[in-house]
Length: 398
Image 1 (cartoon, rainbow, N blue to C red):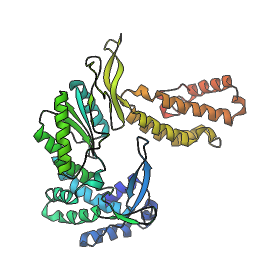
Image 2: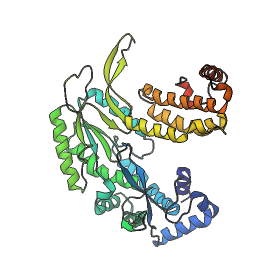
Image 3: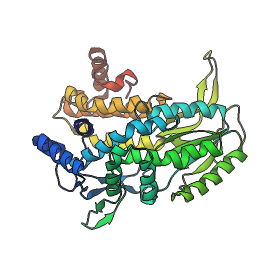
């Protein structure tokens, strides 16, 4: 229970339907945790309704709904997730990367890059509305075969979480199966049987990477890719799911060596777009086309929107140190993730941040209204404090 609370507190997050924030929960922490433990131990814990919020989709096309449980319910779900985790992680496939200890999205991207060099074809997999479509009984059955007799309480609460009501913005309640802390464990466990194990059994020669409900399957030939695609469509129907009709497709890994023609020659996985890109030879004397990942256009657009909403140039009451204090954690996060592969694709975004900083200086200090003086100030700042902003290790131009 204590470890579950520590994780929930570290993840922060918004308040649920009861309006109780993490800070509110903390004020009477011991009593709140005891109340959760007491009810879960006695079998009398019932999850409260989940608050629905809408967030823009990564591709900018519409919005997706997200359920936000209460802080107490997030703690309860994390208790169940921590109970399931040791057993489930021991049986998961090596190429399942989502929400597992010691695994990360970047590891999946790196393995995908490596396999794209060896295989000419990819089946880009996206499952449509996983939690709205998944068969609850099959999820429960997957949990039942992975617990000890002493852990039957997990099944009791999983059933309740799967049917916890969702409170819509207009106050109406509908049934939902989307939780928070326990959902990734349940999704991974379900997909282990529905996708990973099945693919290993039916197509032992193909390789894949899966992160939650996004996956990439590598095939040697177009014919094999089409057979895998068709068979996966049938398999998903069997388990109550459906492949997304627009986001699931076959892709040809076109580069200098593989120069055939095909309708799709790029795909996006975990925020990275894989396609033919310029790369230097080992001796750095020439350039060739290699099939490589780089930050996707949608991810760049989303980050650009964040930078624009910062309104840096208007924050003239702040000094540079204050700006750096709240900007640097975000910038480092972007650089650490999206700069892992082909980092030069981030140059435009980072240059834009610098442009906003120069506009901030010219607005704050009248003596810098002249571009030449602003340029001189900028160069002096870089000499005096070269590490002030995290992104300056990569980009100092504006």
